[in-house]
Length: 458
Image (cartoon, rainbow, N blue to C red; front, side):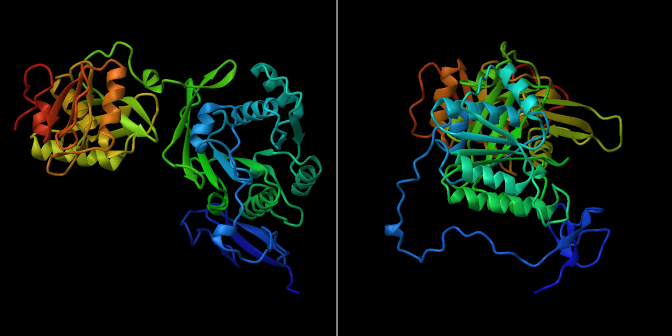
């Protein structure tokens, strides 16, 4: 039998070595390697140990989804929870992870399920006070304060809940491992045993996780590979809404998101999020543009703002929030080279209102015209939606699901859409909606209001 040995492991990536080093050899981070105790490997849990069968013989009667009672959460999960699945939810402190899980357990208890909420960071009295603020009685909601893994597994076997919430996985520890709770070995071992335990019971597991300063889930990266679904909370704690985005989902799409509004009664789903992110007046201020982004099955209208001002330094500033920095740099180069907009000596600031992050290329035209509008002081006409991907030659490329975006634009009261010529060929335009076809950024610039200024010179 192998003897106990000393190992050193990185808290960020899990890289291990037999001697202490100041810099991790896996991720390159400094001062992340800590000493851990390694013991002989124990027998690992198994999913069943049955002999292989054909795909047609696999029984799927128990894979029906369980509705959570929260419409937005069902949306981001792909229609509900799958029995035996493990779901990891991460987010910064105070953003609403515990509040959402308490609401979820209450809704499931009202629907006749048996939820078990295990807290390792708060006392039962603190959870009760939060529930009182949210108006939750919780007569059928099981609650426990525990950090020992074996005790949690005993609760699972004795109570046999249909949903288990662990808040948080970084606080759970396994006896026999001398490392502290939250370290790589503890998080990996505890999560692994919990996942295999619930899969044999058809129980749904929710693991709440901390995030680092970089916004990534704390602990080993393998934790995200072990679970079936990974959800990230986005948004500022001071904002009145929260965004729950699916990063990984084995049972549903990964491009869906849920939008909640923080109220006195807790997190409430937002039925019409576009009205939440758009300015009520929709004034045609220079440097502002509206884009229709596809987030899963829904269309989200977002307001992109830009401020371009003369730089007081040799190297101008480039600050972005909610969009990709490299994408904005590319659009600045295209505007400078293809349209003659002198941005090389200008400070450029780009922001997506509401703290939402835009990733699809369909927002390129809105970002480019917002910067051009701020530089030339020529606003985009009020009630206009901008759609299109911009290439290096300044061409405006087509976008997907254009008809869905146009229908939603009409519903929200927009009167004009500037879209790529390729996307709207042979398409019936919605009534009361003016479609302006463009093939190049130069054509889109013609629709800005007001005369050309000195900053614009082709």
